[in-house]
Length: 298
Image 1 (cartoon, rainbow, N blue to C red):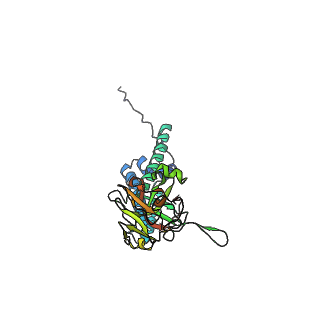
Image 2 (image 1 turned 90 degrees about the vertical axis):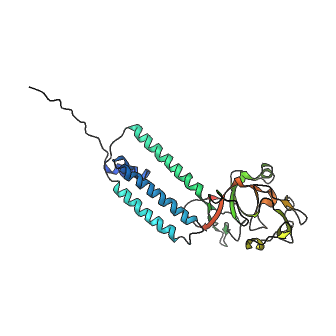
Image 3 (image 1 turned 30 degrees about the vertical axis):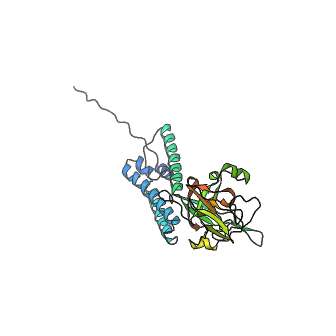
C-alpha cells in the first residue's frame, strides 16, 4: 500500500474589512495594494495626490481665473477619495508587528514628503501688519474692539526657478537673508518671513527726489504701481539707506531692493539694505482666505 504524502497548507490569516479602511485613511490605496491589487492601489494613491496638487496650483495660480476651477477639482477629488475608501472595505492579509511599524513609518514619511513637496511649489501666508497696505491688508481693529484678520496670500515657490525677480513683483523672503549687522541694529528676528515689493534690480542706482523713487536719476513709473508710491525724503532719524534727497544707492549683484507699499509705515530696504535672491522663497500670486492655518509674513 502506497501512502500519499499530503501537505497541509496553513490558511492565510486576514484582518476584518474595516482594518483596510483604516489603512487607506493613512495611505490612499493601501487596502487595495495589500489585498493583492497592487496596480490599483498605486493608481489610487497617484490619482488622489495629483488631484490635490493640481487643485492647489489652480487655487494659487494668478493665471487661473477665480476659485471655481480649484473648487471643482476639490469636489472631484473628494468624490474619488470617498470611492477609494468604500472600495477599501475588504479583507487584507495579516502582517507582523514590524509590518505595522513599517506601515506607520511609511505613512509618516509620505505625509512629510507630500507636505514639503507641495510647500516647495505653493505656500500660504497670513498678513498681520499694514506694511503692504492698501495692496494687502493686515490685521484691522474694529470700532467695537474686535480685530479683523489680515489678508491670506498664496506664494509661488517655483516662480524664480528659471527666471529672476522683476521690478514690481511682490515677494516673500526669510528675515535671515538680511545682513546680521542690520538685523541686530533693528532688532529683527532671524526666523520670520517678510513680504515686500521689488523696486530695485541688480545694478540700479536708486535715489529719492520729491517723494518719487528714481533710478539713474529718472523717476520709476513702470510698472504703474511704482508711480503711485510716495517716498518721504526723511522718515526716521535711524534711516541708513536713501536717507535724504542727496543719497544714491547702487543695488549689488544678485540682490534686490524691496519696500512696502505703505511707504510711511514699513521697515524695508531703506533701512536694512538689499536682500540676496537666494533669500527669496517666492512671489505672491493671489490674495485669498484659506480654510487652514497659514504662516505669517510682515
